[in-house]
Image (cartoon, rainbow, N blue to C red; front, side, top):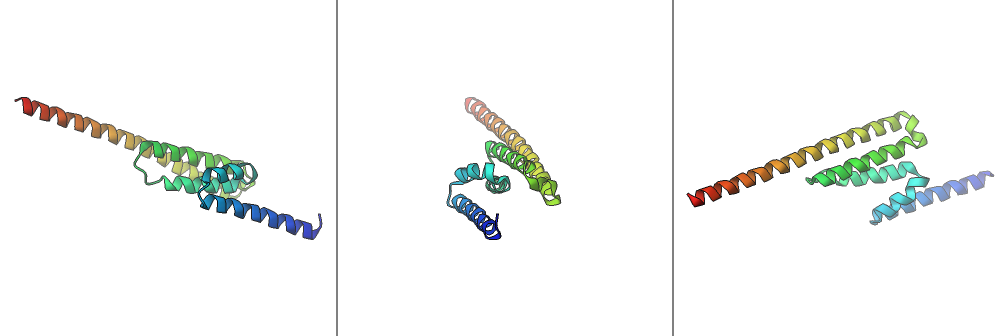
Length: 134
């Protein structure tokens, strides 16, 4: 390929990437992710990671489980990309796995906390019933 042909291919690639990013920013997160997944795994992993960060502060156990699954998928995408062999790629994968573990732990703690809260509510209601009957 000639030098100008290579430049044109590079420009097209950057334009396609910019369109995917714009699509993601405009709200079509799933569509942008699915389109980027086969063609640009690093970009797809970035989309997944950003979406997972939106779920970070959720107090719902299901959101934390979903966050962990998304982070694991992002790590898997990065493992399959050529950047995985670089130091930055390895660090990114390690961070994603650590965050997924943190999200799983948080999910377990939130689930346990909600069970304790429900048990306390039940005991309180039972105590009120006993006091009302006495």
